[in-house]
Amino acid sequence: MKILLFGKNGQVGWELQRSLAPLGDLISLDRHSSEGLSGDLSNLDMLRATIRQVRPDIIVNAAAYTAVDKAESETELAQLVNGSASRVMAEEAASRGAWLIHYSTDYVFNGQGTKAWQETDAVAPVNHYGASKSAGEQAIIASGCKYLLFRTSWVYGARGNNFAKTMLRLGKERETLNVIADQVGAPTGADLIADVTALAIQKAMICPELSGVYHLAASGEVSWHGYASYVIDFARSQGESLMVTTVNPIETSDYPTPARRPLNSRLNTQKLRDNFSLRLPDWQSGVTRMLREVLNK
Ligand code: NDP
Image (tube, helix red, strand yellow):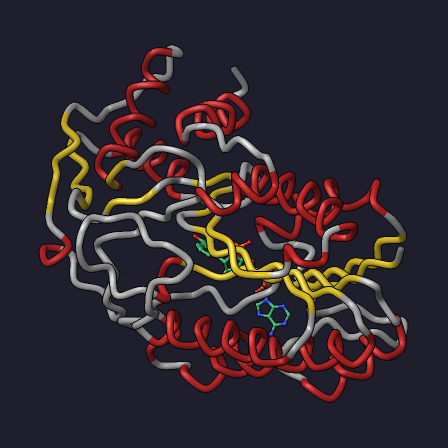
């Protein structure tokens, strides 16, 4: 089985390099890849040519334009990478009978209410990033290819920057941290996403009727403020020397950003758990593991 992975050096892509390796012949690309292959999603002709050259059985797309605030001004680039490139992958997958594995976001929803979003709920993005991801979803669904489309939320990886690392750094520099308390979701590890992806691929290969949209997030829910408090408390319990004494809850309206953020990022994961017989651990277990790695504890 030949697997073509795009975005190998992103948070999820990095973990997919590990989790997909045992499944088959894995060809991993980033935007700079060479040897006649291009993983640059902003060049649609090269992207199409690369897929035709590799002739994969499975395309896994972990690449995306993920700069939520910048997408408000770089709208066309976000649409190209998140919308048009996904369409090209889906068309190529459809024409060769391959699977497309793709990731999307709770930002396709409008963030209203407190109920966890289901796969069947209507999308209504409130920012350009969400709109570009929604365009990618629609192109995949319309293409007729077999696909697993995982919507996830609040992704972190031990590698690179993430919210928890930022809180640890600021906690060493400041006495007070102001953190948004009215956005609620579930911090989800890139490692969990990659492991679930590999398990789901294995089952989908023998049950093609599992093709569809799935919500994939760690269990439980928390606000950014609760998440920050958890990180600070854990670091302190491990003997980290921190200056911070107060983690202050603030509202989204107190912290203006170029892109509007949905308040309700809760995802209902029942369909994924039922169809693939999986359990999704609570967000604290993954965050604790990442913190132990980061703090070397
Ligand atoms: P990252 O930002 O960590 O990784 C995205 C990768 O895409 C980077 O390696 C980036 O490369 C690459 N990329 C960007 N533009 C291009 C391009 N034109 N051509 C090729 N590669 C490109 O994202 P995550 O791993 O966190 O996200 C994985 C998926 O999950 C995405 O689909 C994202 O939309 C979705 N998601 C992410 C969430 C999050 O909180 N991060 C939340 C919900 C969903 P480079 O580093 O060179 O720019």
